[in-house]
Image (cartoon, rainbow, N blue to C red):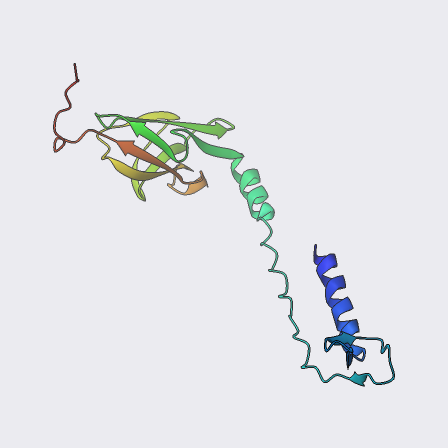
Length: 180
């Protein structure tokens, strides 16, 4: 596509530098051409050709930090931590506000390390199990992130942040009755 635009602009620029002639035919119509068909054709004074400058391409995205990830993986031995349940951008309909969270860690948790769960940017607690249950979660959108922390409390690896939406029935809603 870029090549076609470039060739088109070059052809327009080349034709813009050539002389343009104007003459009037016997019926009164005016003709413009780059080749004079008659001796009475005169060069036409045209306004300058409008130039459209093509914007430079956007900068390339930064390279992923594979060296840092490789160093982190070599130092800790962990290659992957992900939240598998609830799914990212999922909607849960749970009236008691209980949300099950499941984590996937590769390789399994080392001795002395523990999982840490953060919801909406606040740490909820730490534990050794990759499955836990959050209780009495308010309705609305929430973010979850998991991390593995060593015995000193330093984060070793963390998961991507996911968002889930919890829908609960409100006491402010009128009771719904089944229609006969």
